[in-house]
Length: 101
Image (tube, rainbow, N blue to C red):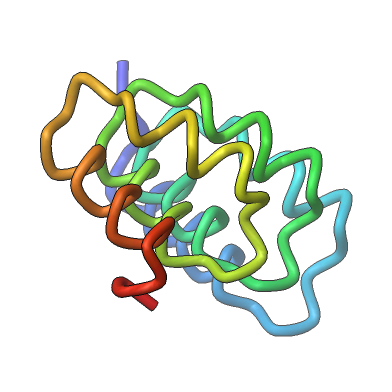
């Protein structure tokens, strides 16, 4: 079962908080709602371990957020180039070519 609207809104606000701690980001990186995980994946201050873990997510919005994050390790982006989601694979290939920055 998904989060309530209030829970989701609160988690999204927390994920956007500039002074959030690494521990809080790690907790949000495994949140049940993909919108929250995507918000974490897009943060340039997201811990490297969380970025690597999020590379195994099954939701395209999370994977696309990872690709747009310049701090996402290139090894994660290379793996995403083989994604079953064509938009994810295309975006990863573009990033690897240096086009999609």
